[in-house]
Each structure stands twice: as C-alpha cells, then as structure tokens.
Length: 133
Image (cartoon, rainbow, N blue to C red; front, side, top):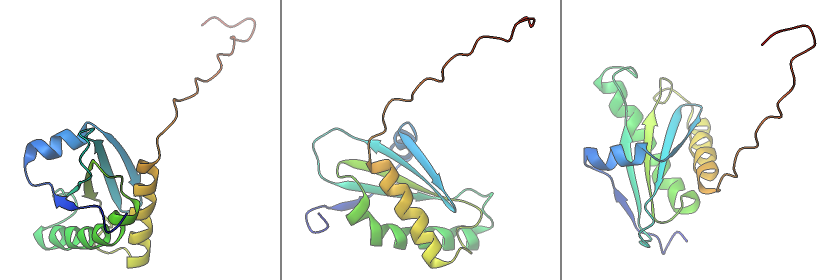
C-alpha cells in the first residue's frame, strides 16, 4: 500500500474544519482527526496544527515538525486511503521521546483505520426499592 498511495497536505481552513467533523482519537501527545471523504480517491491528505496552549512559536513549530516526520513515516502503512487526517499537537509533543511519539501516532492511526461498531447501550437497572427517582 505504501507505494500506491499518494500523500498530500491539507492547507486551507475549510479542509481542517471538515476533518474536525469526522472521528478523532487522542493518544498521549497527539490528537488525530479523520474524515473519510468517500470520493473514491486513493489520496491521503494530512494536516498539522498546534494551538498557542502548546507553547510559543518555537515550541509549536518543533511539535509540528515532529508530527510531520512521524506521519511521513507511518501514514503510508497505517492511514486509510481516501481520508483526511489532522494531527493536533498537545502539551508534551515537542518534548516526548521519539519512540513514544511514534507509538502514539501509530496507535491513533490504527484505531481510526478500523471501523467502530455501534456502541452497546448499558442495561438499565431499576431503582432500589424505597428510593424515588
């Protein structure tokens, strides 16, 4: 799959906002959002962002550079074709060890690539006798 899939970048705000409407997965130092485009195109599009809560511009840029490199290494293997992904840096992204950051990105991508089953509703339990609801 790594040789057949083309990877592009998300660059405009509407693309990022559309991806935010998809599913997301938080793992350690990264949050990954995924939107399945359902357009039949095998292109994977990636976007990267960091809020000012992460730190100053130097820290935010370092966090995004690290996320770009982790995504470049792992997206061809673990990302689903025809999807848009947004990688959001968290507080520890810039300082997290490289192996742990790769593990966070990999687990988020694999979790997002597998379809989730419908949530099982919790069984309703009757209120104990003598208590009003």
